[in-house]
Length: 384
Image (cartoon, rainbow, N blue to C red; front, top):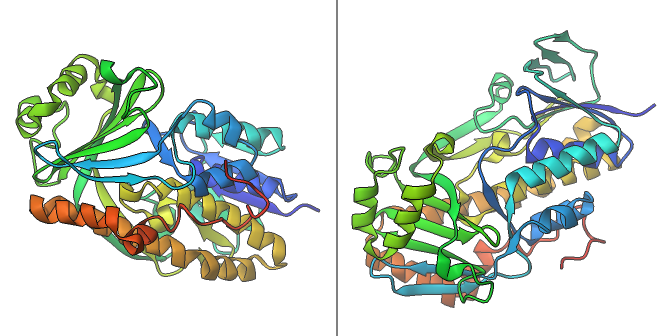
């Protein structure tokens, strides 16, 4: 008889875990409290490690077809001078969040899994029991909690070790690409560029042939910087050389879909309790500076399924899973938070740090460790 899993949350981590378990003969039900399976936000960077996982799950070609490959990461100072221009190793794509979620959801259903929308999980028990707003089900062999950074289920299990609110956060939106960059041959067409001015930053990344993804970051204490709709006078004053971009934002931004998000770092005492595993932002939220939040969720979802396939007892599998995967995830958390500290540094110190990232092989290796990693379960998967 197939082992059975109950999964809470139809995001990247939950759906990837469901697809990986189904491929290994499990019976799976995914609970999503909202009426539809959909992703929050717009575009997202998926590096080579995450692409390897998507390929192992059979959806890489579909989601990658609608994305744009990124080859360089460029940092510019307040005077619009380039202070670092770093080549991106392997394959990195700016992809649609919704395209990834839709592809994974279809994979789950095609493999015989169930996605129960409008199903809110109120409690989980380490013995494998899930209680929803419709009642309590029979104990499962595994429960996966992947319901986000503010997970009450995780907290009720007593697993939270720390939640650290960082000094900065971001507004994210999508606007049409600047006219000078629509030509695929434009020099910055495949570059992510971050512009710095004081403690503010504008991250500009082409999303596809037509649109660009923007993240505007600043300190949480900057009331004008985090205002929605955007306080254009103060942003224009900080980045006068980006006037054409702010004109585009003024004309095209959909402010109903934009919200301020303060960055956090979440760490757990353990990633599991009995038959319950926690993954994704619920287990290891991090700031997006290295673009690895989704990558770590995907890697850990696949590796959990691989560990369960190798152990008869879920508890043994989850101990091995955490021992194997946690060091890399926490390394990424540390370096992503370190990069974000540059927000509050003087401009000269920040520029010096970015030049170091460009010139120091060791620093680049630390920041790109996850990108270069071959995730568990993908050894036979080629990266292209």
